[in-house]
Length: 493
Length: 103
Image (tube, rainbow over all chains, first blue to last red; front, side):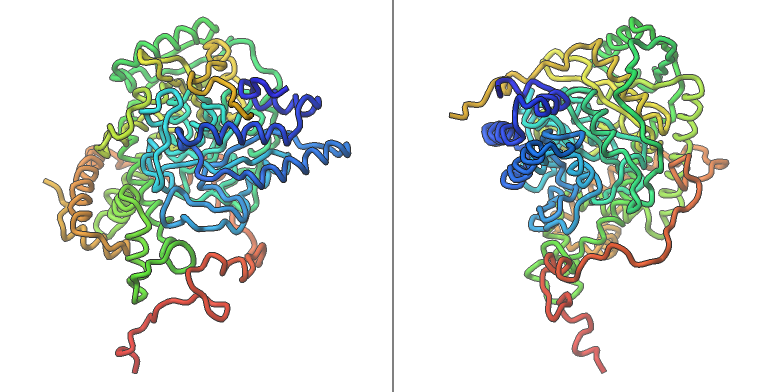
């Protein structure tokens, strides 16, 4: 009954549960043993919530036996990035500062998932405080790419992407501030969606850059993205930036093609893509074969997006991470004798190199003498980027870009901070403009490493982005491919 | 020529309340110089007639504040669970004012 369960989408697993083909307990045990078998070599999970998930599964099986109404996600195992709170479980944010911090409340997204009977199976690894593009900045260990264990899975949601790609769970949640869901999705051949800013509540997400952060799903299939978005994409009174929007179906009336749809490509902006350009051009041919009307658009202003982002995001991060002062929570330095030492030693010991560097940069751009020409300048650039997207969307329905300049890179190979920052060149713009953006797998490079392509839409067009991504996913027809090392049943004897 | 030197790093250390080792300061100096030099490329862009972005959400152009009413409090007991040290229901910290400073 359980054979090959890992090959299925979350939707299919839910159907098998509803039809009594498999129990929730069997599903939980199945994925727990896959995690036990494989997590050692991947480092995707920081915590596996074995006892908790088995208890929830048992209660769900009982609920089903008693013919009680079941949630939309009944029986589906979901992994949660470890910067999102599950009450009474540790939230580390990938940081030594919070290695013993117990979340005192559920994030809204966690509450919504559990209300629909999802089985939360573990907390996944990330770059510390979501700052990074490789998961190498985790204070604990790096996560490896299931397609090539010498490579990173991308970041900062590397653990979330790797766990889904290796089929250790069908769905995970990540967070995306500059590409942290989409870039790991592209590196691991998964689908990663960053919703419109404000579509998904940030209550219970440890803030990195509050005007850029969004929680979003990672899955192997677009249909699962839609399934999760119907649950987590709702207004939250605890998040003042949460939008009050009507409920929409992501799963009905999926179009058959891109007929009557105009797709804009910013050719000038992406022209120096280099060796992956051929793969991107092949994807455009497929779009055309689906009857998309493809036009060229001007988004040249995006060449300034890295500088803009690293001013604004680090400024916001320096403010958001000021709360980690060793006073109320987190690891307080045992060396501290004065109040000032509590702050400066606790932060010295608790934060890694990249986090310290970004806090300092953010403080610098906000400091007297610099704020006007750095921070305010970046705010103006942000408006120019928003205006450029508005103009582009007046001539097209969607914008298509590669997700990343290259496929997954070897762990340890990118040491220069600017090289790492440039990983985000194609993703950052969606966060700056607050627009929905999805990365779907488009193919493989010459080393059999996955590549991804993005579809972006205007603000609030989340449903359209996911539906048309589904059309493109079908045309690429690689969704069922599984990394060879993980494409086998685990011996549970 | 970068505007960042060790004096700037010392100043930032104080503002950020992070005590860095000498090696860390050297690394940060190099890093910050590189990144700040890069972000200065924005200087050349004409933004004279551009208003800064205040709110990214185009559908929400006003502040959304709620009524100033106490809701959803964390209990003291829950809150203290994560505190590094507490005494009598309060967070315990080293003395804020030096003994010598007290009159």
